[in-house]
Length: 421
Image 1: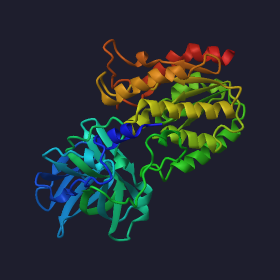
Image 2 (image 1 turned 180 degrees about the horizontal axis):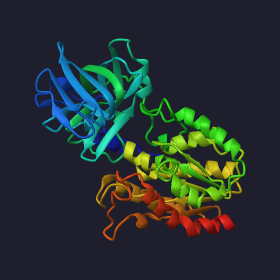
Image 3 (image 1 turned 60 degrees about the vertical axis):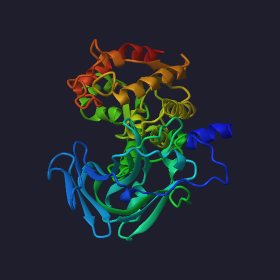
Image 4 (image 1 turned 30 degrees about the vertical axis):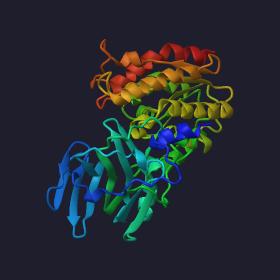
């Protein structure tokens, strides 16, 4: 068990006694050095008057606007946006460590139309450290109900090892899809009682759940139901691929390659864009491999744990292992070919690339050489300097047809060996 000393060091750096005074409440919207900014996936604009905007009407990624109303309410509207951000930024770094043990983040929130959108709450603890509380479904439930007070424990935004000593973005309201939301009275309080929940970062990767993102709610479950029917029609499949959007791409950019290499095995692709380890686990527990007994299952997922949560490699690996255990129970006669998570980012120094590389080291330890086999083909995608080319993965994440051809060729020999056993 974690010692009290270690727990206090994580939560607040200094272990306060019960009689110690709580730190001073911070009214974020009244900070002397506060800047309010609006951002889309490419641009950021400071609110220097009553309104500001990011993006362009009709452009890919949509348009985001921000207005200030009497009473200091800040309203963000966004349309067909991959990402929209209402950021509270401080020119003077803030030490939030004293607030992590018992403090809360409190704000008033008013949600407009959110039928095609969703929200998340974020605190940024460093250049490559942002901590997010998912709020898509609750924000949809709040639509049209006026101002409501939300209180989150500051522990929702902290993980072991995070450094909150010099925070310059103490709050961000993140939107996606299409929607409207307003905030006011945003504060970080030394003590308080939370009325909003958050997932436990230590267990979320192993806790089965559907993918509840603004851009996935409409299609994710229907796709799962379609895959159940596809599996019923292919009971003699010898090969199954299980993963995220990179596996789903076998149905799109990779379809010609799929037909050449895998159609002969009556292969099934169970890939869902955006899936993290807990979402794959939910699908397995809800029938996606039931009735199958393939010779080989190819697994490759976890990069969305990295991209969406900047998750610790240890907990991502735990999520992958939980899925392997589930597959071993449901498909006891199937060999599992576990692939290293593919490289992402252009160069070796990319933050997501570094996390995935650490995950892959741990994933290799899940192989037993009998039921579970590990294969790292990542070098096939990279040049001599370790750089990833847009000619293979145009967005430095998803392969195009050329990338799928590289995947199939690099995996061919070890896959055939397993299929022939």
